[in-house]
Image 1 (spheres, helix red, strand yellow):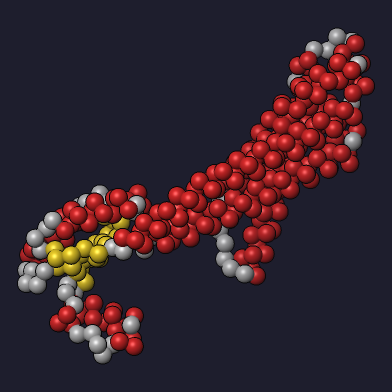
Image 2 (cartoon, rainbow, N blue to C red; image 1 turned 60 degrees about the vertical axis):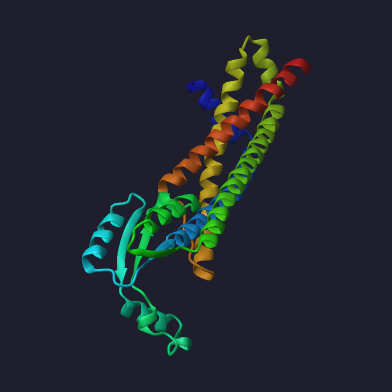
Length: 286
């Protein structure tokens, strides 16, 4: 293993330009993957912020007593779907309506605005089925006249989130495959450049594993270095966009580390897929 690591490091010294080209190519392919991931994270955060506004409004019947409202408030707060519930009096509803719709402030009258409960939901209960189920359960109480939650808006929001997950996963797989192909090409060039050396190693009795291991380590190192460079480029892009256009969310340190490790894994995988095929060609032509 020590000899294989030394050979992999010597490959950088023997062909610094080729090594730099390979690392740069890997870095830019992972950079494209990182930019896509950054866009996906910010889209997810934006959708999460919108989802946080999903709430139900349960309107009370006229003449509901304080005791019944208090009991109903406790029942609703105990539901697992509910994160927070609060009572909105007719006067509070009137003040809010006049503030949000100032052009119609003279139209609103407290007598036409019933008391209501504002119900905010936990993260795992904001899909259309869960929201509709909760609305039906609350409607079954005799003191509740109606429940509104913008059914079409919730359905469209959930549809957008589902589409973004599928599209994001598909594009992520495509970018990863492109990165593997690029890394495999750089390893192929390294194998071809050392064809004579490999032939000599074969003549002195080197096994396939002994010949292959330095290339695998080289691919792993190139992938890791390319991942680090891609992370730096992604950070620079995030900084420029945040300062010039709008605030964006960056990866957490754990996600950055996972990205670098993924780069190393992709480098290893690209080497593994490429080196066997091209070594067989070298052995056959030798």
